[in-house]
Length: 263
Image (cartoon, rainbow, N blue to C red):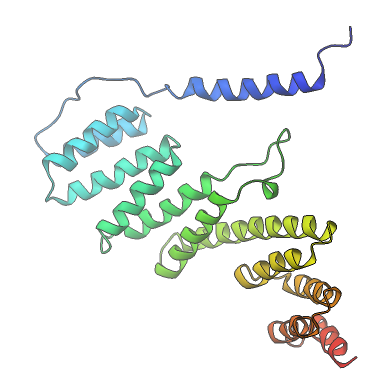
């Protein structure tokens, strides 16, 4: 009479979204048997590329594995190794792709495309981050393992390859990751403060200003001053204000902090 309960509707929608992508896993992934291998490494690479472009992933993998095995001392073998990581990436096997790209970086640190491999390793971690969905809790409330993995990989890439053509995109994603991690730490700090666990809340905000510094540092440092004041820790309260002055000299925030220190 009144239709199915909302909880049931949500469960049905969730099931549909799980089942539908699963059906697509086999698209372009059928077993094509043994490929028509050529005697030249370059020809096999080309045929693998054509298969990859056509989303024939198993066929592409066979060509690349053949080149890697049969021509181990040629540059084509390194190219095939990198293409195998690309196959995993295109199949959205993010963990496998990250491992393959990272393995390439370790084995071939002087290769012309090592920055590409390092960037794609970081990007694989980035793609593996759970997304927000209206039926699930916000990402700030979820486990941050993949977010932190992406943060570390992007930081390492930016530090190691400052001249790479991928550096600007990496920095943009780095900013996005930082914002995600900050939102999570602030969410947990709010949780603790509401339950009067002030020391735990302060610890989370210290993580924000120490590990993920950014444009809103003054807000979190003033909040730390308040928490430490409520904890009767005058030294840490004053230190929080001093950090505002040091980090943001000449700003209204620094002037406010200076007045509070002088009061």
